[in-house]
Length: 201
Image (cartoon, rainbow, N blue to C red; front, side):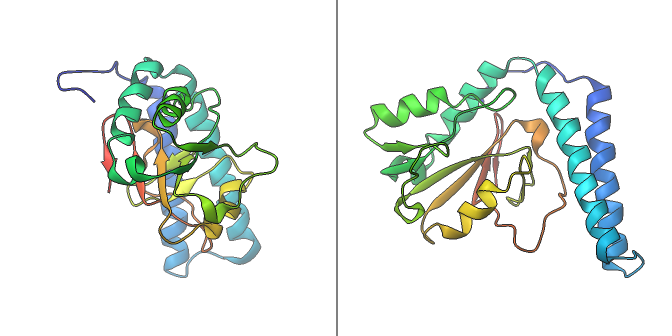
């Protein structure tokens, strides 16, 4: 984000919905850690329900988030300055959906830079072991790189197949970075999370 640039504030009611969903997960997580939660099927059901609540709340927030084109450009300016991004020759990008950072400027930059670009919808998809960089969208992230996806599990299946030296960069708006997420033991975190104003870690 350029110095002095300010984005409009978000609706407080929407922020409370995200906060309430996240607080519910934190309470469940702490109860399970101390052995006071029943666990088993009920615990799994509660975790999945919490994910759905968070997905709906954040999706609603993203729909009303102002200045998304400007926020997206600020985000991609940071992404394209990362050494691992500039050095990558083969990139898995994504085709943005409504409410996600617009990937078109990044894809254009990749082509101008002579990079090979693939997309999740490509058929056939190149061998995941050939990627140097994967750009990962998500519903929410933590500062440590944990990710909450749309629920289809596509990236959950892809990420373990990548080379150890393949860089993974999560991209999201500030409102999508939360202190905790209902992650599973098999979930693979991304290396870096970039928003319109921050880079984590």
